[in-house]
Amino acid sequence: MPLVVNGWTLLYHPVFGKRYLELRHAARHLKRELSPEQFRQHPTVKLAAAVHRLLIEIVPANPDAPECRLKGELARFRRAKGRGLPPRFRLFWVFSESARSIIFLYLNDEATLRREGAATDPYEVFGRLVARGEIGTDFRANLAAWRRAHEPEAPRWYRGVPGGRTASDRRNQADHPSIP
Image (cartoon, rainbow, N blue to C red; front, top):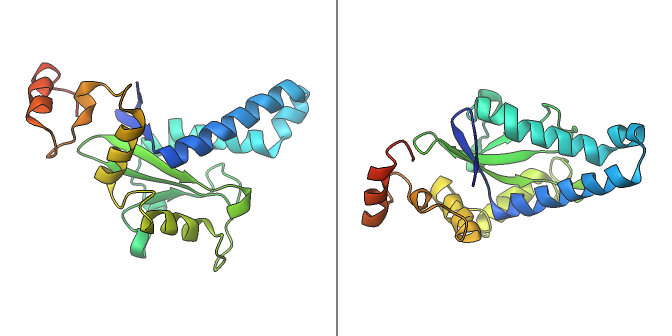
């Protein structure tokens, strides 16, 4: 079941989910291998902690914060930089006010650190993922990707979005009127 924070349902796009799972797994492995002091100082652990804080505290506090807005072709998306993230890392998401949902889409890695103009710059990589259709161009497309990846565990009531529900979904919402 998706986590709800500050009234926002938090979802992970498969691209982000894979990366975040790998990051968490690496941090757990380091916890077994390192002393407590080495563990706290390790860059992977610091990154995992910063991403977790962004997911659970910072982004749900205001997913449309002005400092997170992008321009140009990526203007419909949001991104975090700084706010605990190491300097060259970026976290991208899309949200829907009406569905009260945030879908985390992409977190760059060590091979795609921020370097303006580079083919491996996270903005360039993210833009290519969108252009290739691996990440949707809007909230609905990304919600559909989340559903495809989580269909067996997605509650029936969550399969519809405002304006895009099936008749069956609308009937089920009558049983759960507070659910998007």
